[in-house]
Length: 87
Image 1 (tube, rainbow, N blue to C red):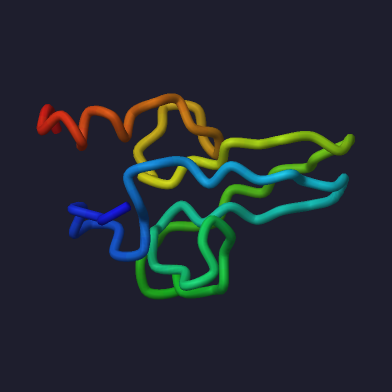
Image 2 (cartoon, rainbow, N blue to C red):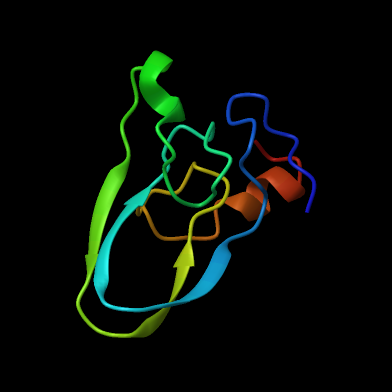
């Protein structure tokens, strides 16, 4: 889905729904990572930092893609406001 958000260049207006194994994950909060939804270190010049999340059991996760969620790192539907033109 196309990204209309200039603030987060590699973000997208939908979640990254993924089957996750137990482990430690660094979710990209700056939107600069080319390995979305995870951090690749591109935040170095932004003053932002990744959000580290520990998954303790295998499960499906909806990682926020728009970077504007109120429940980071998980999708809360905020991207729908971008699609509706309300943000």
